[in-house]
Length: 184
Image 1 (spheres, helix red, strand yellow):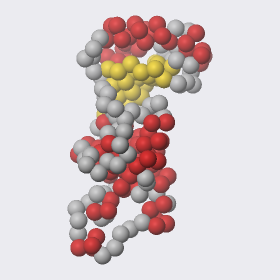
Image 2 (cartoon, rainbow, N blue to C red; image 1 turned 135 degrees about the vertical axis):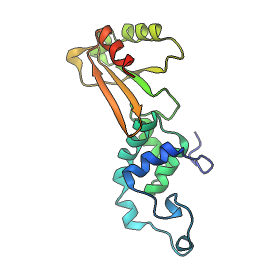
Image 3 (cartoon, rainbow, N blue to C red; image 1 turned 60 degrees about the horizontal axis):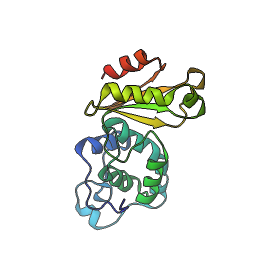
Image 4 (cartoon, rainbow, N blue to C red; image 1 turned 180 degrees about the horizontal axis):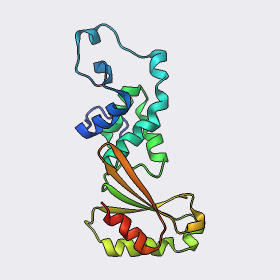
């Protein structure tokens, strides 16, 4: 992936997700329309560095609202926080619940760590994928530990929705997973 996203533009929904967290951009340096003030000075330095802790919440805001993090959205968030794109991309690709590739708004994360694998995670994934088929609007993704080893295999249904995320941990009896997916 090219880590210079100069040509990529965020969608209105992606901008709204970031702006809901950070407030509207104050200058063209942050993504606002250019004004005469922008021609005189750039903002940055210590105040900009003090906002870097908002990178992870910003990535969550985009992913939760849209379902994935596009190059344009990542670029917009980087400009707003003055974070290098390579650093933000590294964070976005490190966490398994984020995606930098388009995917449906509803995602079933199935834990495939040791306890869940031993309890039938692969069979659960295969069964759900077979029932849903292509074009179902649901993505089944293998996931690292969800922290529910006692209820293995664990699954998490996440729906990207305007304004918030709707996550639902499912006991993985197959009917429970199907009910949670159908609630979209």
